[in-house]
Length: 117
Image (cartoon, rainbow, N blue to C red; front, side):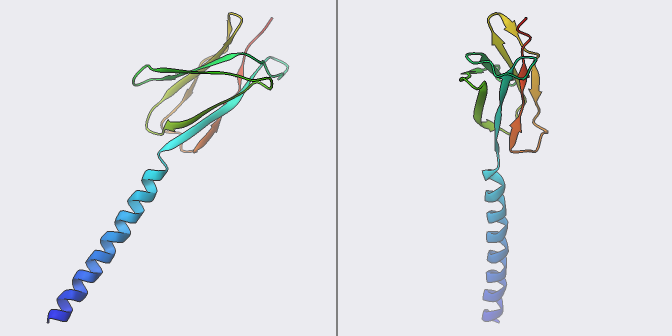
């Protein structure tokens, strides 16, 4: 009888440990990465453009100054928050784009186009 109770407890603990392990794996996938390029109408990279990323929940803004090839990179974005992103160069601005919390991809690539004319 005592051995049977130990067996039941061991099985229950094993199930709980498996469940806890599955939950911890899910928690690791709670961030996303946003990358892309700031380009003109001819798809040329626009160096020194500034990309603005706004957390729609807190309204905090992060910025990124793009390099010579026009690329930008925002790592470790919360997966359960929407973000708005746009680029600006010499007073001209791209359209705003939204990164939705319902987007399931861990890496999102958005190119931002500025009409430099």
